[in-house]
Image (tube, rainbow, N blue to C red):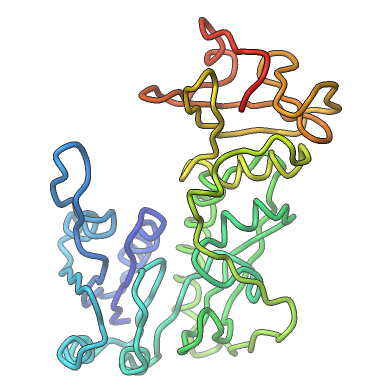
Amino acid sequence: MRVVFMGTPEFSVPVLEALVEAGHEIACVYCQPPRPAGRGKKDRPTPVHARAQALGLPVRHPTSLKGAEAQAEFAALGADVAVVVAYGLILPQAVLDAPAHGCLNIHASLLPRWRGAAPIHRAIMAGDAQTGICIMQMEAGLDTGPVLLREAMPIGPEDTTGALHDRLSAMGARLIVQALAQLSDLAPQPQPDTGVTYAAKIDKAEARIDWTRPALEVARRINGLSPFPGAWCTVDDERVKLLRARVAGAGTGAPGQVLDGLRIACATGAVEILEAQRPGKRPMQAEEFLRGYPLPDRLD
């Protein structure tokens, strides 16, 4: 099929690669514009932009698709379908209607649960037992369109957003290739009106750990915010990122008290920090992190 691909972050890259490998013609790749990054604050292309260039594909990165000129340029591509995954721009109705088979979105949740910007983070933080991928026919509402294909994936008690991100990206790449191969045979299923939840964008203010919360909630927050933006606490006035944790039985101290190693008391129970990162250092497993870095009696 003649495909317009629309995606921006690392999550989208395996999908683009899978479409190329499956033999689809990529008419154009749309992504977010390069933005300043790194110490020199030089413009850096997004992961999709860089991969598309390496594959020799044409790339466009408009700041908006609301204008008539941008919409006409999109329609002129004559696409059979647009594949959209974590693109980052609202698609106006004229864009949604332009491809012969419309626009298909790869969404990282089991819709209608966790519509919106941060479905992987929110699923882990809420303690969901599973998540998955939905291939959805896009319409004007936020992730409200009918679903063509869905597949579930379990969430383990120590899964982080980073780990789940990689597995879901691979699943999305596989399912979109399947969906395009079977497109004429797939019956869109409307989403139910019950069970709708919204995955609000992660606010950095959520990242500071509150040890007065139950251990299960603290562990889920740490894992759900890893690796970005990264949950954190202070250790002797130094901000330390907490990147992976698990519930570690009963706590016998006040919230925030260091019980032993990296096992920290919470309001109820305790959590064991499995991976952490000091400022300017690389992420470390607990044993390495503690080597030569004595902890105070209490973390804030």
